[in-house]
Length: 245
Image 1 (tube, rainbow, N blue to C red):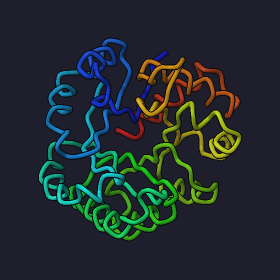
Image 2 (image 1 turned 120 degrees about the horizontal axis):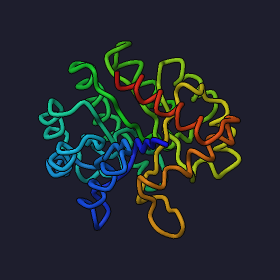
Image 3 (image 1 turned 90 degrees about the vertical axis):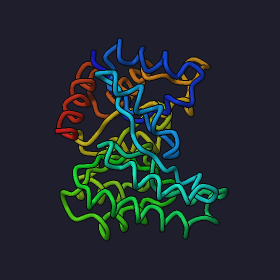
């Protein structure tokens, strides 16, 4: 069974280098998202020597209040990668006060990706799904970039709007452990679903989830979509190939 972990913070694990090697050895397609552009060089160096790990250039919305000036560096590095993430907006109680700055930064990210073309973005959208979709429609002409909503928590109507725009969704076992999450995933087009761990921010067996643990998400995805784990794995791998083609 081939596994896909399309959103994992590999550089936040104490055994970062070993985990990159493990993901490659186990042939798990892993997207190593970053939270600031200053983390890019090391992630890119390690991923570039692998077949199955890819690094994404990030500017996490939860860090924008303190580190928004790094968007200049982010723009300079964009030409080095096809993958972008983690980026987006967060209107949670701790981060709502920086929303104006987040919007400014995210607009610059979207405009840069639209200008460059052929970028794939892993998007954070806590309590902001509608705003994120509005910005995508405003800033990115159709076909200039591809979008994957990571751990989507918006409404079913927001999800339908995103799907109509061609967006994908990466789902994890924690998301699929709730009735609301399962109902949302059940409503998604099967050809737009990927799997993720969002490790180390989720856990399996009492320890931070690693890419090899993404099989749990496949099992729960299968239950939500009436598929066997093997069928779920085939669907996700096919979707990944379509996304990255």
